[in-house]
Image (cartoon, rainbow, N blue to C red; front, side):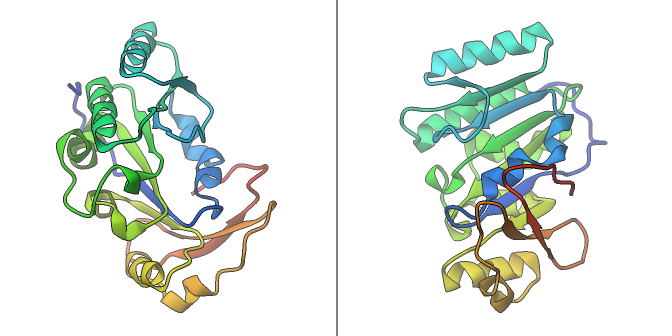
Length: 222
């Protein structure tokens, strides 16, 4: 299980949502915050990230164990053949066991709605959302539909990012999360190959701020 608890770590979890092509993964890949982590573990069923990809439970477990033992920086992704809740629970169990408060770990979760529901986070995923901060874990959870995920990560997320969302229900829901008007989300410009738009809510009482970035180049600072 996780070791070397350090309550001094600040909450830095991030939730990102938006329809296909909204720039969620591109934003994350260009985020300079990720450069601070020497250890990165990724749930990546669609192979969206550069990493050592593992396609079986045994391969992922052994690769993570060897990477930790080496003491060197690593990026390891689990590309499960079947992205089921059971496979996701296995992934979360390995991540929980790998956490070490002396070595902060970035935890990237792609397509969270495929493997959780709208109830309270359970099992190892629930452990990660509620307790990983104290062991240096920082979760970056990505989903197309915010209403279909469990609300644990939304409640724990210090940063909340929203790209283009197409349905009125999603815009209404995210307006409450971001403290912006649904019509502001509806009026967001369409993305192009060189420009993506988003709203980002940072810690504190301020409403989310509108931003844009080039998905092909440049670094992004929070």
